Length: 497
Image (tube, rainbow, N blue to C red; front, side, top):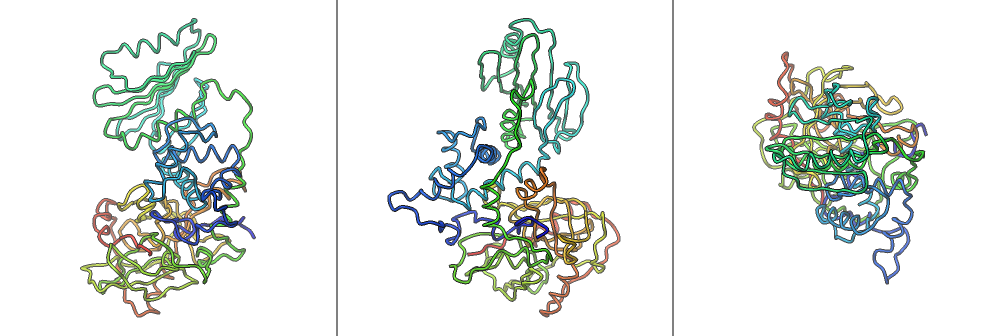
């Protein structure tokens, strides 16, 4: 194989673990658990996690918004409570121990949150601080008068400030801590003080802040994060993740290269692998005819004909006893294995549909917009819209059936429309690169490597099934917000039961 075990992962099926109860088949342990402990399989799985994998679980819980402490790899009371809170919110029993599909989904939440925020490690050459930050939010960088940098968000005014205080006398850190605490314009909501380390957070008017500093010998280093209060929900996980990544004086011990053997084995088990001669079918989850139907999971579908025809991926509808689109029952007309496309139909009539571009052939570098429902019920239930460009005209192993795009997609985007900057349909979301497998193979995380089914394949699929899709050739670009407003009623979650 050219791609190690599941480099390409379908955004439904295996990677899209259910957002309510997990699939019956996915809950069956490889080895029957002892009757005396119903959680033995989950505990055995946890015991196989190494230090790096345990830390990644905690990092993912931070991004999921249920863990607010350091990622030390120790699964104590706080970690158990965080796992239970995430399970409850995701529709699972709150056991405090993760099953295989739950662990797979949780790690995906962490990877996707980092990708969405452009999470990168900053090696500040002026202060020599190491801290990770959201590079897609904080994009404007300039020197400040505190021997550091201000890295800001031009849209909302939030910013990260790093600071270095050379020739600091003994107790200098006390002055930093006490001066901030004595500021009457601030309301302190949290403090931590131990030795020459302090953490403080609070509010000042309509703004929120978080500070962390440390003194060693004759030097002190610190950072401050400021953001508008209305951004509190968005910044919550970012604040905790940044604090956890803060090394004011560099790493105290050599950092070993992280390994993820259990995660990779789990990826191989739950995600489909891509053969040397990749096709769209490679993105389809493995079939087991003896398995019972899936419990609730979801993907994305869109209206392709005013007569009630809806398009999604085949792997989204695989093994479903019943299907719903926008909460209403729909029938499966046909599903094509080779092209990973499925056609659904409802009795409802639609006033419009998403039009195919007359020249559906995509161009390298052209703008694309993706609509869908990633992690529906885990993060939100609303429509998600991202944009990017076409980055390659072929898929894995040069598969001609696919094209590559860098618009962000996550589990749940499967089957969603890919449109151009005029709102015309040019493809269907099908898959993304497997983060863990790529990380092990290359030592780096993939950045927005996602794949779509070409519009030509969709067009032939529709013609073969007697569906006449509307086509357009619009000359002028349309603002993204107008595209979103027009297409939102036509793009809905496909629910599999």
